[in-house]
Image (cartoon, rainbow, N blue to C red):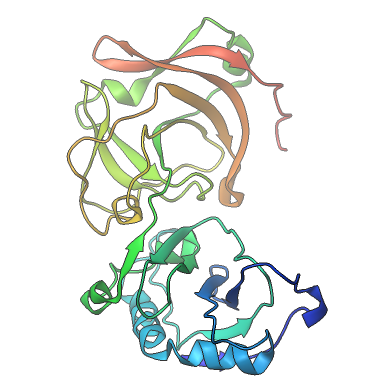
Length: 296
């Protein structure tokens, strides 16, 4: 663990009378990692020295985190399969705020133990995709992952301009891949890039079942049909660290979205419901959004 105590706001920005965490940030090539340590009653007023002392009190646990992150190079990266470069410890910077920032990603929550009640470690999805499962040494630290919303990438389509223009409420857009017995979809968190997703097998009775294999890839510029899971799940299921408990149910609503290449996802063009059609599936269109111009 490396400690860099460098306030990014003046103490006058602290609002008196509000319960606070000690909030820290560490940069990585995949975005910032954020740490929130519960402010104990014995802590002094917020200042750089107190922030350093509070961080040092969690040094043993943060060393476990550093060791875990350093092992990231042993897993193929989620964005194209390249090995992730190892990281040599996190440089934590104190961020004087009264509440922990909210970032897209998964959050480790501590009910009690080294982080104190309400402690949180938030990691971006792009970083988590590079990592193996957390080490066994973390299991006895009172930590648990917050359940996360997830979505299932059911199909990618190459629609022509004429096919896009023909979409209308009440129409049925078939998913050709769903008619194959080898059909695999991708499980990911909302907001992940188009290249991320754990392979899942479709259950024709409804829902998906996690399988083993490399992350699902999406052709740049393709249209995507996605449906959210009916319930939040453990991030380890989304990341492929461990299996799910049987079949994961899907919400009935689904969206047709145009992928914006490496930048992520573009416009959601159509919303509707998944509808069985023979041995496959279709998207029954219920509403359309204004069509984006090609090349946007």
